Length: 214
Image 1 (cartoon, rainbow, N blue to C red):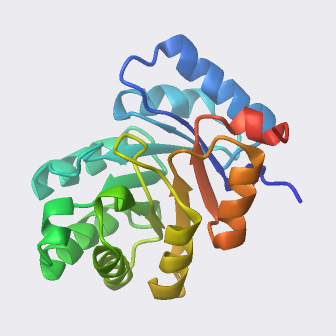
Image 2 (image 1 turned 90 degrees about the vertical axis):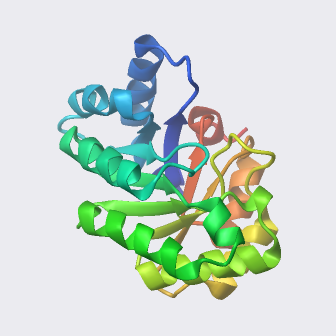
């Protein structure tokens, strides 16, 4: 089985250069990855690099902490889509989630989903900072808001994706919501374990290595 379409080929480090972003796009075209995932400043550039391909441009909103106000996230999302983003990975408001402010979290996600319209919205919940109860509530929020994906991690916190979290998501997330595993997926066996557990997208900076089966 080919796993290239599972991969969001990712480069989100703060000092990523235009040269590195161009290489990322070239690799995504070569391997026909699902998307490139980049910081918002590179969305329009990636859009021009990926024209006439099936590789989508994904960017991050409220990244990496999720503590921007809703208005800022809304404006970020509008700007990203205007610049050519086709997929949006937003970071959930983690303090609201942990305080069980379910309605507030759902409203925020719904607002971004409305802006996204037919574009994909993935909701990053940062599992390493959550209890199991928090994770179940995150599934509830994402399901109620009718986002497209729940995503484990930013890759910038205290931990990344685990198969246990993917299995928990699969149990509690709505049937129409997909799962993206992200953070710490470094080997081919890591990727296969996440997919077996229920992930349908893999966020990784090591897409080329994974395609080589290493």
